Amino acid sequence: MDNNIVLIGFMGCGKTSVGKRLAEKMGFEFLDTDEYIEKKENRKVSDIFAKEGEEYFRNAETNSIKELLHLAKRTIIATGGGMPLREENRGLLKELGLVLYLKANKDITIKRLKSDTTRPLLAGGDLEEKVDRLLKDRRSIYEATAHHTIITNKKSFEKIIKEILRQYNSKNSLD
Ligand code: S3P
Image (cartoon, rainbow, N blue to C red):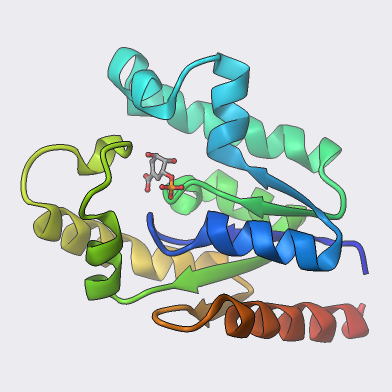
Protein backbone atom coordinates (compact mmCIF):
# COMPACT_ATOMS: atom_id res chain seq x y z
CA MET A 1 0.00 0.00 0.00
CA ASP A 2 2.60 2.55 -0.91
CA ASN A 3 1.70 3.79 -4.38
CA ASN A 4 1.58 7.52 -4.93
CA ILE A 5 -1.72 9.31 -5.43
CA VAL A 6 -1.82 12.02 -8.11
CA LEU A 7 -4.54 14.67 -7.88
CA ILE A 8 -5.54 16.46 -11.08
CA GLY A 9 -8.27 18.96 -11.85
CA PHE A 10 -9.10 22.57 -12.56
CA MET A 11 -7.75 25.52 -10.57
CA GLY A 12 -9.63 25.84 -7.31
CA CYS A 13 -10.97 22.27 -7.20
CA GLY A 14 -9.16 21.54 -3.91
CA LYS A 15 -6.09 19.55 -5.03
CA THR A 16 -3.79 21.19 -2.51
CA SER A 17 -6.16 21.43 0.44
CA VAL A 18 -7.46 17.88 -0.02
CA GLY A 19 -3.97 16.57 -0.79
CA LYS A 20 -2.41 17.95 2.40
CA ARG A 21 -5.13 16.46 4.60
CA LEU A 22 -4.99 13.16 2.75
CA ALA A 23 -1.21 12.95 3.18
CA GLU A 24 -1.56 13.58 6.90
CA LYS A 25 -4.22 10.91 7.23
CA MET A 26 -2.19 8.31 5.31
CA GLY A 27 1.21 9.22 6.75
CA PHE A 28 2.41 10.06 3.23
CA GLU A 29 4.51 12.98 1.99
CA PHE A 30 2.73 15.83 0.21
CA LEU A 31 4.09 17.54 -2.89
CA ASP A 32 2.61 20.26 -5.09
CA THR A 33 4.11 20.46 -8.59
CA ASP A 34 3.69 24.27 -8.75
CA GLU A 35 5.69 24.59 -5.52
CA TYR A 36 8.25 22.08 -6.78
CA ILE A 37 8.77 24.20 -9.92
CA GLU A 38 8.85 27.44 -7.92
CA LYS A 39 11.59 26.06 -5.67
CA LYS A 40 13.68 24.93 -8.62
CA GLU A 41 13.23 28.22 -10.44
CA ASN A 42 13.42 30.33 -7.31
CA ARG A 43 10.46 32.43 -8.50
CA LYS A 44 6.69 32.33 -8.54
CA VAL A 45 4.60 30.64 -11.25
CA SER A 46 3.19 34.06 -12.18
CA ASP A 47 6.75 35.41 -12.73
CA ILE A 48 7.64 32.39 -14.86
CA PHE A 49 4.56 32.98 -17.06
CA ALA A 50 5.27 36.72 -17.29
CA LYS A 51 8.98 36.46 -18.06
CA GLU A 52 9.30 33.18 -19.98
CA GLY A 53 5.80 32.48 -21.28
CA GLU A 54 3.47 29.52 -20.90
CA GLU A 55 5.44 27.07 -23.05
CA TYR A 56 8.45 27.38 -20.75
CA PHE A 57 6.24 26.63 -17.74
CA ARG A 58 4.70 23.62 -19.50
CA ASN A 59 8.21 22.27 -20.18
CA ALA A 60 9.02 22.72 -16.50
CA GLU A 61 5.86 20.76 -15.65
CA THR A 62 6.86 17.86 -17.89
CA ASN A 63 10.35 17.85 -16.37
CA SER A 64 8.93 17.88 -12.86
CA ILE A 65 6.86 14.76 -13.55
CA LYS A 66 9.84 12.98 -15.08
CA GLU A 67 11.90 13.78 -11.98
CA LEU A 68 9.16 12.72 -9.62
CA LEU A 69 8.97 9.33 -11.32
CA HIS A 70 12.39 8.70 -9.74
CA LEU A 71 11.87 10.57 -6.49
CA ALA A 72 8.31 10.23 -5.26
CA LYS A 73 7.32 7.34 -3.04
CA ARG A 74 4.36 7.20 -0.69
CA THR A 75 3.53 10.72 -1.79
CA ILE A 76 0.32 12.63 -2.52
CA ILE A 77 1.08 14.77 -5.55
CA ALA A 78 -1.11 17.79 -6.30
CA THR A 79 -0.60 18.96 -9.88
CA GLY A 80 -1.15 22.33 -11.57
CA GLY A 81 -4.48 22.51 -13.40
CA GLY A 82 -2.81 22.44 -16.82
CA MET A 83 -0.57 19.43 -16.17
CA PRO A 84 -2.67 16.91 -18.16
CA LEU A 85 -2.92 19.17 -21.22
CA ARG A 86 0.17 17.67 -22.83
CA GLU A 87 -0.39 14.19 -24.08
CA GLU A 88 3.07 13.14 -22.93
CA ASN A 89 2.23 14.15 -19.37
CA ARG A 90 -0.93 12.03 -19.31
CA GLY A 91 1.00 8.80 -19.62
CA LEU A 92 3.65 9.96 -17.16
CA LEU A 93 1.02 10.86 -14.56
CA LYS A 94 -0.47 7.38 -14.79
CA GLU A 95 2.98 5.87 -14.31
CA LEU A 96 3.46 8.04 -11.24
CA GLY A 97 0.49 6.67 -9.33
CA LEU A 98 -3.26 6.41 -8.98
CA VAL A 99 -4.60 9.46 -10.83
CA LEU A 100 -7.75 11.02 -9.37
CA TYR A 101 -9.66 13.90 -10.95
CA LEU A 102 -11.17 16.23 -8.36
CA LYS A 103 -14.18 17.67 -10.12
CA ALA A 104 -16.07 20.76 -8.93
CA ASN A 105 -18.93 22.40 -10.81
CA LYS A 106 -18.52 25.71 -12.63
CA ASP A 107 -20.32 27.92 -10.09
CA ILE A 108 -18.32 26.61 -7.15
CA THR A 109 -15.11 26.93 -9.15
CA ILE A 110 -15.86 30.56 -10.02
CA LYS A 111 -16.74 31.38 -6.42
CA ARG A 112 -13.45 29.94 -5.19
CA LEU A 113 -11.39 31.76 -7.80
CA LYS A 114 -13.11 35.14 -7.58
CA SER A 115 -10.59 36.88 -5.35
CA ASP A 116 -7.54 35.02 -6.63
CA THR A 117 -4.66 37.08 -7.95
CA THR A 118 -2.00 34.41 -8.31
CA ARG A 119 -3.13 32.53 -11.42
CA PRO A 120 -1.84 34.03 -14.67
CA LEU A 121 -4.40 32.31 -16.90
CA LEU A 122 -7.23 34.04 -15.02
CA ALA A 123 -5.73 37.51 -14.83
CA GLY A 124 -7.72 40.34 -16.47
CA GLY A 125 -10.97 40.06 -18.43
CA ASP A 126 -14.14 38.29 -17.46
CA LEU A 127 -13.50 35.48 -14.97
CA GLU A 128 -16.72 33.58 -15.70
CA GLU A 129 -16.04 33.56 -19.42
CA LYS A 130 -12.49 32.35 -18.92
CA VAL A 131 -13.43 29.59 -16.51
CA ASP A 132 -16.28 28.51 -18.76
CA ARG A 133 -14.03 28.26 -21.82
CA LEU A 134 -11.17 26.51 -20.03
CA LEU A 135 -13.52 24.03 -18.37
CA LYS A 136 -15.09 23.19 -21.71
CA ASP A 137 -11.66 22.59 -23.21
CA ARG A 138 -10.33 20.60 -20.31
CA ARG A 139 -13.02 18.46 -18.72
CA SER A 140 -12.73 15.61 -21.18
CA ILE A 141 -8.94 15.71 -20.84
CA TYR A 142 -9.14 15.42 -17.05
CA GLU A 143 -11.60 12.55 -17.38
CA ALA A 144 -9.44 10.70 -19.90
CA THR A 145 -6.31 11.14 -17.78
CA ALA A 146 -7.74 9.99 -14.45
CA HIS A 147 -8.25 6.46 -13.24
CA HIS A 148 -11.28 7.81 -11.31
CA THR A 149 -13.26 11.01 -10.88
CA ILE A 150 -14.14 12.29 -7.41
CA ILE A 151 -16.87 14.93 -7.26
CA THR A 152 -15.92 17.51 -4.65
CA ASN A 153 -18.43 20.40 -4.84
CA LYS A 154 -19.70 21.08 -1.32
CA LYS A 155 -18.57 17.78 0.19
CA SER A 156 -16.60 17.91 3.44
CA PHE A 157 -12.91 17.08 3.38
CA GLU A 158 -13.69 13.98 5.42
CA LYS A 159 -16.12 12.70 2.82
CA ILE A 160 -13.76 13.40 -0.08
CA ILE A 161 -10.89 11.67 1.69
CA LYS A 162 -13.08 8.67 2.48
CA GLU A 163 -13.94 8.33 -1.23
CA ILE A 164 -10.30 8.64 -2.22
CA LEU A 165 -9.26 5.98 0.27
CA ARG A 166 -11.96 3.66 -1.05
CA GLN A 167 -10.58 4.00 -4.57
CA TYR A 168 -7.03 3.59 -3.36
CA ASN A 169 -7.79 0.49 -1.31
CA SER A 170 -9.78 -1.17 -4.06
CA LYS A 171 -6.98 -0.53 -6.53
CA ASN A 172 -4.37 -1.95 -4.18
CA SER A 173 -6.39 -5.06 -3.45
CA LEU A 174 -6.24 -5.84 -7.20
CA ASP A 175 -2.43 -5.42 -7.46
C1 S3P B 1 -2.66 26.40 -14.24
C2 S3P B 1 -2.97 26.08 -12.93
C3 S3P B 1 -2.15 26.53 -11.79
C4 S3P B 1 -0.70 26.77 -12.22
C5 S3P B 1 -0.65 27.68 -13.41
C6 S3P B 1 -1.43 27.15 -14.61
C7 S3P B 1 -3.56 25.93 -15.32
O1 S3P B 1 -2.17 25.54 -10.75
O2 S3P B 1 -0.05 25.57 -12.54
O3 S3P B 1 -1.16 28.93 -12.99
O4 S3P B 1 -3.17 25.95 -16.50
O5 S3P B 1 -4.70 25.51 -14.99
P1 S3P B 1 -3.45 25.28 -9.78
O6 S3P B 1 -4.38 24.35 -10.49
O7 S3P B 1 -2.84 24.65 -8.58
O8 S3P B 1 -4.06 26.60 -9.51
